[in-house]
Length: 179
Image 1 (cartoon, rainbow, N blue to C red):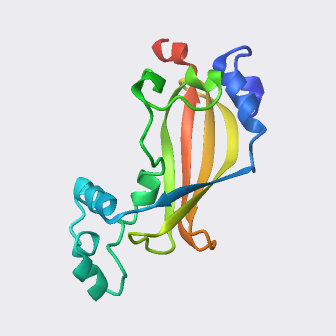
Image 2 (cartoon, rainbow, N blue to C red):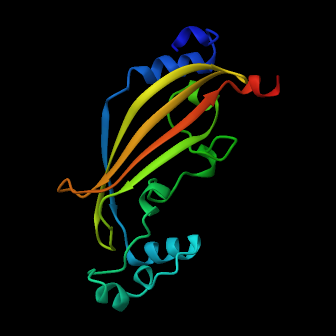
């Protein structure tokens, strides 16, 4: 379906139009490198028990030069750095990024696919390609929604792909949640 299912002059319709112009565009940004402590903390947090995530000697014995990131670490932590100051967070705790219209929407995950191509070890430099794959307006039982699918390709500066992640979110106007 297209935008005619969306009530006009709503944040959802505005966001749909804005995002449609970005379909297929690649935004590339360097994320920096993973360090041993970040990998160990993430592995501990998710309950990963393989010693290659914690112990340098175990990782080297398995053929790696340093500790190995759990397979979902890149997709789970693709916002690296210091984080967003609380004053710049939306009411729901998410970073205030994107257009003013997107800040007024309610969103939730609607699916994710991940392909792990190559393990990531401490010290690896990571570059992220973000691509808006599709933006689709649909009339659902709960009202009009916009489904946004993005690809996140995590790779080395040389181009070697570590992880390819496709994520879909569904967005709707917040006032429609209470109806």
